[in-house]
Image (cartoon, rainbow, N blue to C red; front, side, top):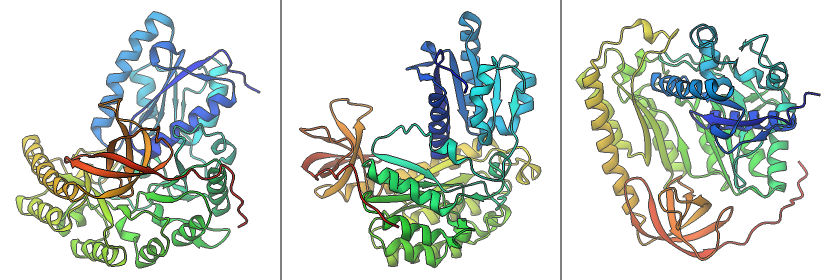
Length: 452
């Protein structure tokens, strides 16, 4: 068995929750081989950069960071590995253009890191082959970053081929984890005292299990029946396949949070058509009505792209009117950037940068006003918050998340991390709530009996 007891490693993660979960996988593989985590890149012998390729800006962050690591390599022989989506997408380019990178490794090959490191990073420098199944041994080695909220991957890849999206090229086609393995994870997490489960996948609502004949609503029902975790979330969903059966599954279990991330991307049916999203503005609005009828008070978030090829001022105005009508609790908004291999990249990037910047600023200004109003409605109320740590801006204040996924900063007499707290909201801004802890809910037992 490979022994890396001499190795101190550091992982720098760019990207979404899937990337964060991948970093937990990488840490688990290295720890099982004897590696130990370093506190920083400066105190490590190996730096693994876990990357995102969804937008050009994400790649730019990687290349900037690699420039910093190159200097460290010259002074003290640092080993550098690039993992994740950019590694999968640009493995050969990284080898040719940045030969100081020792290892380039895609998401399906993390289990091979110890053997590559034991060989001094020599041999196959770009490992990006796809596998058809799941490496369950590797997934059991996760080193979880949070003692409170746990990621559980249920599927990977995507078959939708939205015209702008790189995911099918960096994560491959859809493959689904067996239901029995997912439920075993949830049961183990329940026994360990985790309060929140977050199911992950590029398109979770496409989930299906060949063994049990189960679909995503079945998974939600089965997971919610496991005693222990009190909040269940999932992302990301695609509106194309988000049907009423999923809404019904959410509504019939109080363990499923009244919160959903459902990417809209554009409020214009014409732009959605060019994006190959598979739904219209009217379709999306009907899904929102269905969600709010089934679960009044549900908090919704979304993704928005401005400056997609051919987007007119009228089409952009439809996005603004959709935001005003739906009133999302949060959005993630971006300027369009062409991604290699996608069909949108062949359309031509015809919207000037200054127009994209102006449209993005208008979207963000409108959303700031909407979020401020939503957050102000919490002032004077007492809400349930899951404590997650200290506030980044003020270490004397604790931080947590509400069921609606709002950031809540609050004062408390005791450490609330890993506990549900009743917090009275005293003030609110556009990006967070602030309050005072009124009561702590009792901690659950660390072991829960469950018989599926």
